[in-house]
Length: 148
Image 1 (cartoon, helix red, strand yellow):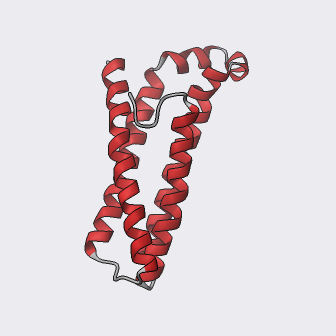
Image 2: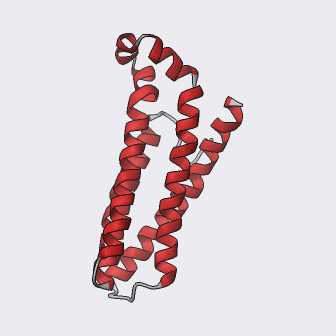
Image 3: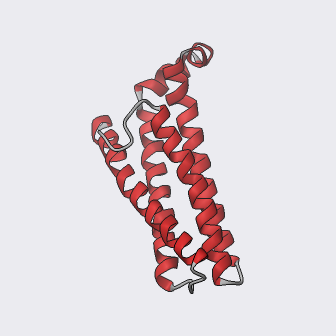
């Protein structure tokens, strides 16, 4: 079961990265082009946010069945001294939760904005910040961003 969830989590990151990146590009185009915020924009941004939330759920399942986490919970003090255990037991999950929170806040703020340009700008800024956190977490794991 662990292997299946790990592969699902690893593979689904491409969906997340693609949707978030497309949403960011669309938001920057809309922001600087002063374009109307369409229902298509809204749906794309929503699907990007949902993909991040789904990835977090898969990751949390993986987190609680992982040998890294079990080892860390067995001796938290020792785990914090080991860079690999600390990363998988604490840093990765915190960074990804932070990215999810940033995207969610951005989505909610955009939804409440009163102009199309503000909606695009909000999505562009918040989703970009979240993408930076996501990419940093992936790179920090030592796993290639676009590899398996």
